[in-house]
Length: 177
Image (cartoon, rainbow, N blue to C red; front, top):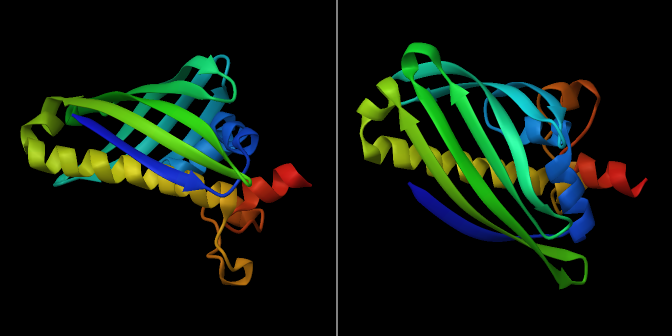
C-alpha cells in the first residue's frame, strides 16, 4: 500500500532534520514504541506493541536511515517481526523544504507491506491501520518539534519524556537552548 502527505512544521529545516535523527524523538513519535536504541549511522532497533483489528502483537525490528541528503531528504526503512502475528515492513521517503519564515514543509511517501496472520485481516483494516500509523508518527514529530500554540495548555508528554517533565514541543526548546 502507498500513502503520501505534506504538512508544514513551524520550525527551521535544520531543527526538523535533527529531530528525525534523534532516537528519543523517534521513540516518542512511533505509536506503541516501548524501546528505541541505536544511532542514525548504525540504524535503530525498536520494540513496538500494536493492536491491529483483533490481533495484538509485539514487533521487534530495525529502522535504517538511508539516502541522507542533509538537511533536505532521507529514507526511513523498517522491518519488524511479530511472531505468530506475522511481519510488517515499509519505508518512508521524507523531503524537507525550507518555506521561509522558520517554516519547513515536510512531505512523505510511505510504502508498507504486511504478512502472516496480519495479512489475513483484509486490506481495508490493514490500509486504515497503516494510514493511521503514518499520520500519527508525523503528527507526533510535528508536536515534538513545534509544540502547541499555547505552551501552558500543552498536554504533558508521555513515557520517559513525561518522567523528565517535558511538555510537547520539548525538542525545539531543547535545541534552541
